[in-house]
Image 1 (tube, rainbow, N blue to C red):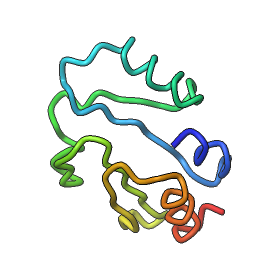
Image 2 (cartoon, rainbow, N blue to C red):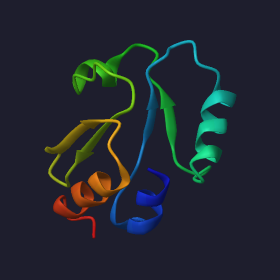
Image 3 (spheres, helix red, strand yellow):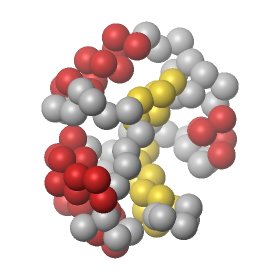
Image 4 (cartoon, rainbow, N blue to C red):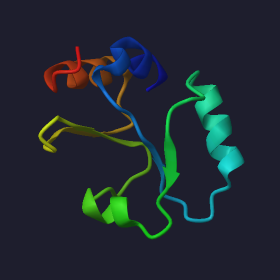
Length: 93
């Protein structure tokens, strides 16, 4: 995810969503540093609003949503190539 965010610049927006309502912000900050993108926006889905809305049932799920709001890619734990391809298909290249 970190490489994908760096490669598309401002052509895409990223949001890291933690589905554990009890997660501490320090854990998220450590994760973001670990992927080399400490500035990515992140949120804790305390009421499972995003989880329910986007029907996320597994950790490490990645969704790519195009400019019209349509989900164009969904995968659990995708590899960097899959992420890059999905972003390109959604117009973020």
